[in-house]
Length: 223
Image 1 (cartoon, rainbow, N blue to C red):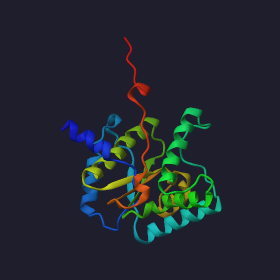
Image 2 (spheres, helix red, strand yellow):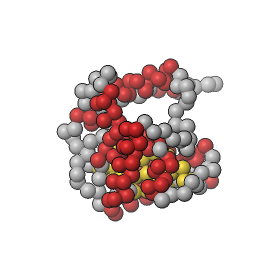
Image 3 (cartoon, rainbow, N blue to C red):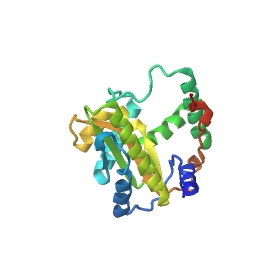
């Protein structure tokens, strides 16, 4: 069982190319139920998952793409990255970007090509399932940690069923726009999106791989 879990965790990657095969509604509900088994402080179980489809999804993606192309900016609901980004973290960010754009043959100086790929975030990478993750305003910082555990549970549950996924932090850049298209009030903070579906194994972008820190880089023993 331990080996099976390690293999599942190792197999999960951020997938940005999906087939058109639909995901059964009941299967999606089962995945979400599994995700909610994640621990949370005082069992608050913070956060919500909103599936967008049909005209709602088309309208949201269209508006997000337009805002990105126009260079529009919004105040985000929470700070995703430290500002300024320390040098050692900036190097990891650059390495991850290089892995992505190298996989699709987009040069660093090809700004138009990079923008086109980034814009796919706002179309949920054309995945059959598009989710928007929210959290109630006023929740403490620890509740973001608890929601993150549930989110990872969802990604692993999907992987166990032969599905693939990608969390989409870019949605957090346009919280007011997302709320307006979803009919949500200001009490709902926009955390991220999730693309979910069956992976297109032939898509070059799905060859993207990023490195992980060695255990000794983030673990130490005292005493």
